[in-house]
Image (tube, rainbow, N blue to C red):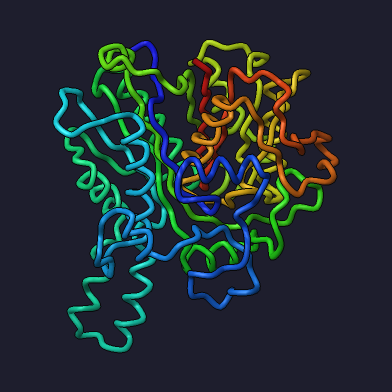
Length: 402
């Protein structure tokens, strides 16, 4: 049974760039990926900002060696790109003796193709061509395509718990490695911007028509984003046998649910509080050992108040530095936990905290302020990353420096 779970590879595609290096460069420049919608065909173009990946499907698929992507969802394409980068960074190879699994998360699945199907079906209900557009509808399709692309056969599963989905795929992978069921895993998630999600969140009245302002008194909602991120997790034994130098350690994790409301967190942040406490318990750490919190920080009135209350409750008189990187990437839904996990690993590697953009005034009831300038002055050894989903599903991860 593995005592430690190491991170040996990371992959990231977001509105900030098409690989880890491009994302890091944008973060270091405090450059947000949120802007006008370009690629998604929607009535909200020019009205609602979003954080799109800056390339069309054909361009992205060409990077994978695919020519025809008519029936391939953007969700699968982004997922394959990010998983491939993590896989190669970790030096994984097909056919080696280690038991390798893939645990991937998504919330929209292949809905981008289903939307195209619906339009074609209305025009011609009998067309077999149209039916081919829905073969990728289910959430498991993107996982199977990533597994096939990388040649992973030992274990695969898909997790969909709204905005905590990819955090939970990482948690589940870590538990399987600790239990001796896998030697290593590619874990993360992928989600894309669709008319379905844009219209759905707009109907909930939690989208901001300007750039989002996490933890700011004037916050009015989130900006949707898209992207994919994966981490390669490995057991202590696998790392020792391969002689690799890990990037970081996944030292703690916790999942809880306050079951308060279908879409809102409890005002006191009970689920968030418990998930953070569980992560600290698993890591065996005192709260004062946390150097930085990568907050869920969606910039909605409910989330930031709830999460802020939970953080204050867990850490009491000691408040770690914190910020929300959704002010860069937008809210990537099921991919968010993995996106922010990769960003947390980058923070540890480069000893930097990426600031919370667009913050001006603290929430009066909380009176706490995030980091607002690029911070390279403080030593960072332990990072807590939060991801909270609809239905009250709350997950927290702790990443530690090697």
